[in-house]
Each structure stands twice: as structure tokens, then as C-alpha cells.
Amino acid sequence: MENMNNWENISDDLSEVTKKIKDKVSEQDLVEDLRESLKETIDNTSEIMKSLLDTIESTINDEEIGKDTKKVVEQINNEIANILKNTRHNILKEDSFKENLEEE
View 1: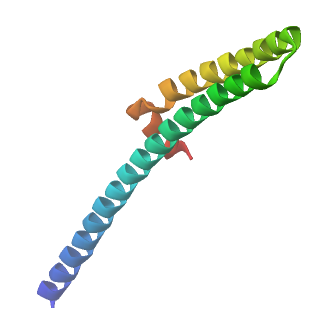
View 2: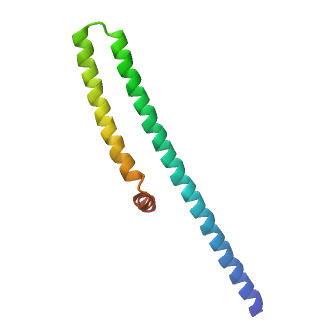
View 3: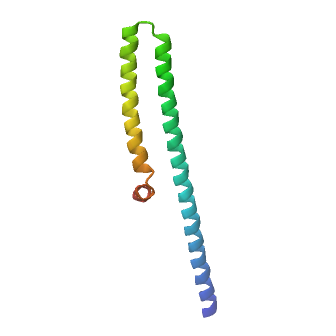
């Protein structure tokens, strides 16, 4: 009878370890997916801003309005770039990112 209990405990322990391993692998996959998604978002945002500037240059005929509009878009672009740079720096640090995940 005691032998059965020992095997049952071993089986429970093994199941628990297996679950922890699966959870860890899933967590690592999630972190990698989030990193890739962030990179794609940054790249897409950059392309959108470049396209917007090109569109402004090619469609606005009034030089003063074009210049002012371009200045505003460049300021927005710089602000977005700073936010993304800080976000990328903070999130892509693995230790910091894992701590944030654990807190949630």
C-alpha cells in the first residue's frame, strides 16, 4: 500500500514538473512573439511617417503650408520615435520584461 502511495506521489510530482516546463516554454514563446510584434509595429510606424511626409511634399503646392505641415509631422514623428525608442529599450531588456510579466 505504501508503495502505491509512493508511485502516486512520484506521478504527481512528475506531472507538476511537466506542467512547469510547458508553462515556461509558453512564456518564452509569448515573450518572443511580443518582441517580434513590437519590432513590426516600430517598423510599420516608421514607414507610415515616411509615406506621410512624401505625400505632403508631393501634394501640397503652397510652399508655406507644406513647410508648416511637414514641420508638424516631423515633430510628431520625433515624438513617436522617442516613445518607441524608450519602449523598445525598456521592453526588450529580458529581465525587466519578465519581471513585468510576473507582476501582471
